[in-house]
Image 1 (cartoon, rainbow, N blue to C red):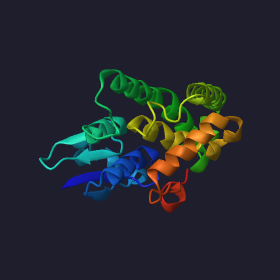
Image 2 (image 1 turned 60 degrees about the horizontal axis):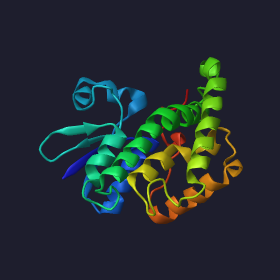
Image 3 (image 1 turned 90 degrees about the vertical axis):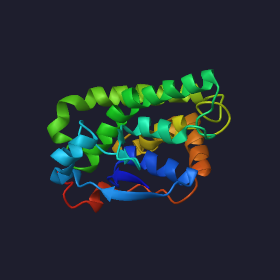
Length: 209
């Protein structure tokens, strides 16, 4: 059975939980206490040298790190990753976009906001907010005439980009200013269905800054 090394408030881990659920894949969960330093232990660093969750442990003992790499692995041969060359390239485009423009910008601001770390990162906040606005504007342009990011149905591109972007209001972005993005988020939520909650950092007593 697969093992998901997880941290519940992580939206990177949320992506993987969603896809595992949609695919009906059974797995074991191993919660990693990141604020207590568990992700930087010798044992965990053998799974992911970068010391971050999520990690997917395979049945043969091998491990895959980086959330979007895990999505690509799991979605192989499923409707969430089309087989044709162009669609796969477009999915990769959005997975790279997510890791360059969404997670390190909106994800970081959200993390700092919800864990009391804004003050110590004050010098970076203005730049992150400008970058976040550009990211949401790019999504707005891209989604103006299409129901999903790649084609007419949900793919791992939507799951990946949705993970942090739909929580942008947690760190001060007004999603109502982006109607196409907001409509897309509703379609993604409908396609995913219930059962994949977003967990607050406050569930972890060690998370406060």
